[in-house]
Image: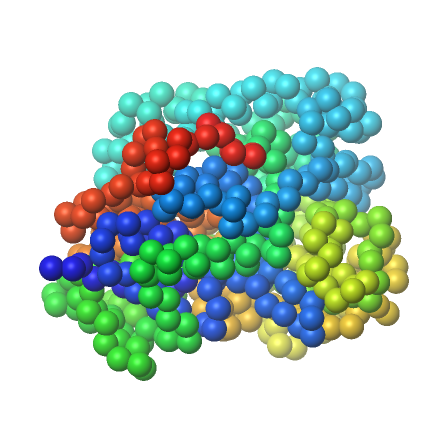
Length: 517
């Protein structure tokens, strides 16, 4: 009998799971409440200007390349990945700037302009993190359904190198003295919605991945990757249904046996939830069915920061503005403390600006530019009325950018969209507006994170930033492989993508631009 798998949500994890589960012979249906795929990685248009909603750094394509190859496709045939150099530009309010190049000698020369001694720490940092990544990869690929996984051989080998008791910033102090240089290798903890002064030292591998394997821009934006995944999934027989919200999960005891939408019922032998974890649990699953992840327990968990967003369609080209620029607050520690406290809006925030048209001019009408502006802020705690405060904070952000040199920005705005933490909560169904999901503190990692085979229910699997292994597109794609493997095993289905030497197409696995062999 053909097995039926229903996936709630067409985000990156849901699409990757759909591609893989289609290879098992199951009938796979993806139900997406919005009118487009991608979740927080979806795109949108405003009068001819195209924007990504969420992730704009595309890193470490090896994992997605392998998923495509397992489906008999090449990622490079479906998506044009533009490798950026410089990777990004950092502007320090405390003084100085750093263009981060992909080539080590060029980057050492840039670091030497800030601190000559610190330039000598770069080769050692890269070598140590190369070894760390080699130890961490088996952990990243492991299902942590049991605490016993902590006693596995790869985990025991890695413990000494990972130094979980140290923070990212403290770990970096072994290589770099200048706080600006350390910030250049630690601001990436924002991908996890965390402070580098609290984030576990394991995550120095985030900046390592950028320097070792590159930063890419998918032509057409990250949404082009999501659409490519949808095309491949549908070519393999997956049904993707948009504008169809799951209203109810049907249970027999603790086992999920189907879902209901306004369009009808969908029976399921297994259910994959790719929706925001906390929001899905508290709205779709009765509290009395959840032992470990009850509403009361979820309320005690730590959540990541949120973001205040400006999406601006600009007249003219933004000459001299890099593809990625990060303006870093002089009192970075205070900025982070204000974000973590969440009781007020950061007064002198750090700001990230993407000027994608410098690499991909077709994202805007002829001669125009799209600017994506992100400001990390606290998630929803009930202290800030964003409906009332958004105009004032918009003014603060534009004034602050003018202070960093973007003096003629406002008069050139032709279209604009503002997204606040309240909008992430309400429009995108993100719990508390915490755009990076559950925080990645030591007490919320590995087996302490929601499991890929959800421990509170039968026949329910999780994928996405709120479950193991965690946030960030490459990590979510790896989570999709873990989830798909576990689901297929329970249903007695084959997992043809698991061949160690060949993709399904018979093509030998190879090193890809920016990936590992």
